[in-house]
Length: 342
Image (cartoon, rainbow, N blue to C red; front, top):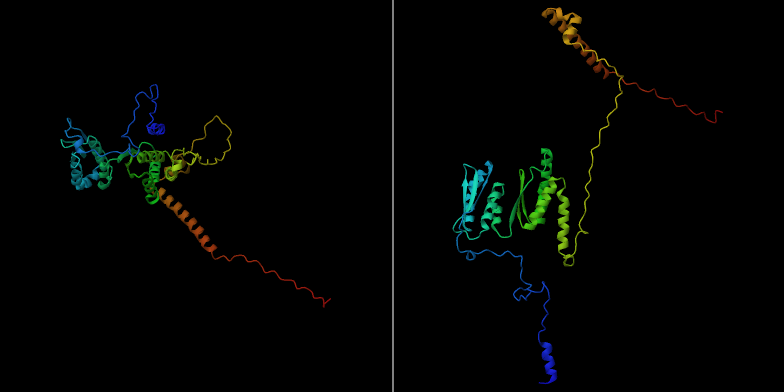
C-alpha cells in the first residue's frame, strides 16, 4: 500500500465528535431513529390492541339538560347510543330527572374516551346539534364552554354585548369561526365552542374581552394579520409585535346637562305658611254649610260658565281663519321727466 492510498483512507474514515465534558454532555448519545421527518406533536390514534385488558373501576359523568331540549334528545338518542357503542361507552337518558349519564364498560379501551363522552353530553345540553357534537369524539378536537352571565350585571348591557358576538346577520360569528377553525354556539348565559386547542384559546379571549367592552372586530383584525404573517417563512421566527395593531381605549364621558342656577332666596328662620286644605277653602266660600243639592247646582253653574268660555275661545279661533291678511299698498312709480319737456 502506497503512502497516497493510506492518506485517502484516513480522510474517508468517520471523524468522532468529542463529547462535551460536564453535566450537559455526560449522557448525550446519538439517536439514529430520531429523524427530521418525524412529527413529534402528532396525536396518534389509540388502537384497541394498546389496551387489551378492561378497566378495574367504572367511571361515569352526568349532566342536566333544560326542559326545551327533551324532545330533541329523545329523537336523536338512538344515534348517540350507536356512536358511543363504537368506542365502548354506555349512555343513559333519564327524562324524569332531566339528566344524561355516560359511563365506561368492559369494552372501553381508550381511557380518555370517557372525558370525550362527557364533553359530548355537555354540548348536547347546550343546544349544539348532534352532527356537530359528535365531532368531539375525534382526536385533536376539544370543547370549551365559556360562562358569560356573571361578567356583566346590567341586563340591557349584557344583551347588547352578547349581540356583538353575533354581529349583523351573524357575520362577526362567522368570521371568528373561519379564523379560529372552531364551531361557536351562543346560547343563553354560555358560549359553547369546539375545535383545535389553539383556536379555543383565541375564542375564549375574544368572548371575555367582548363582555368587558372590547369589540370583537379588533381581535378579528389581529387574527387576519397573523394568518397572513404565518404564510411568510422569513417571518416565522421573528416577533410579530411590530406588525400587529395597537388600539387605545378611549373613555368617552357623557356630556353633563347644564343646570340652571336658581337665585337664592333670603334666609328666614320661620317656616313657610301652611297651604289651605280643601275643607278650609270650602269654609271660606261658605260651600261647606250648603246642602248637597245646592252644591250640585253651584257645580253645574261653574261647569256651564267654563263651557261658555271655552266655546267663545273656539269660536274666536275659527273666525281667525276668515280674517283677510293685511296687504301692502302698491308703490306708484314716478315718471321721469323727459329732456324735451325742459
